[in-house]
Amino acid sequence: MNRYPLWKHILLITVIVVGFIYALPNLYGEDPALQISGVRQAEVDDTVSATVARVLGDAGIGIKLLERGEGKILVRFQDTETQLKAADYVKAALGNDYVVAFNLAPATPAWLTSFNALPMYLGLDLRGGVHFLMEVDMQAAGKQAIERYTTEIRTLLREEKIRYALLRAEQAGVRVVFRSEEDRASAESLLRKNFPTLVTESAETTGKPEFTTRPSEQETRETQQFALQQNILTLRNRVNELGVAEPVIQQQGASRIVVQLPGVQDPGQAKRILGATATLEYRAVDIEHDLERAIAGKVPAGSRLYRERKGGHVLLKKSVIATGDQIVNARSGFDSMSGSPMVSVTLDAKGARSMLRFTKEK
Image (cartoon, rainbow, N blue to C red; front, side, top):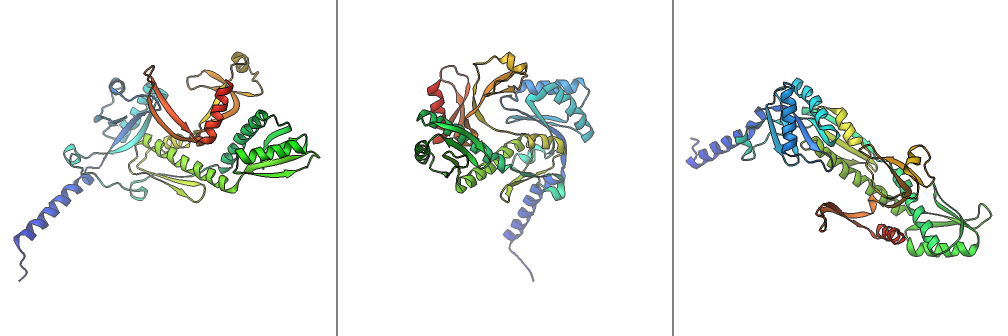
């Protein structure tokens, strides 16, 4: 006779009931939805919610549910046809300050989510979605490092009054041609002291003393790895705008990144958001030349004309003061004097030295 005590039957029934309850969310499916999030300083508040509700109401588009979350709004619809139609109206009303992404939101009832009963998230093989394989431009990272060293070496030689006939960035590194052997020796000694990671090779291809200096192989590998990790971090932040649950973002090989976004319905939107170029450079505003002449096509040789987000123009110096890879920490806060929002940035030793040199000159 197979007889068990009562407590074992109660335990078995309890496990079955709990398992059934936590499996219920998978039966409710998903709702076609629009996720609205702000770009940079744009806030997602009650005003945005009211605007979305008003625009869709005026267009006669029915909303199943409008939810406010932390930094985002989720608008649920009955079917994908209504979702697609609503996206056009919402994008036109909110403009470029907000990201309107297609999403599939779990339709789990509130009484289940209240004790953390959530549906099982499915991968690309079961749910569908988007798979990207992205490659980081390592040559551009190396070229940017050489251009930065070119500016720093030029400034350093001028400060120490070491004369040179030519100084320019080349594919092999920073090439410097001197007027005398004494100047070359002084410059090499100065670089060893201030830039110990640089590799310097002397030459006399033009009949004058010269050398070419470049980052060491170890520094080059570190620069490339830093660029790869920065791209992964940037992609993670951008995926948050799409509202994808459990995305896969990981390194593949030495220069590639795999991005898998289960449930994404708009590959074009995902490609635009993830593929946008993002760089950070500190440059001085050129106030010595006329901006109107630059807009008319007469841009000074040492400057470059940029278009602002709101349509205006700004004239900046070509020389870079500091770059994003020299930032070791950054945090948001408020200015104690004016109370306005601010970002406090901490630079590494190299970036701090460049910023100090620039501010001293100004």
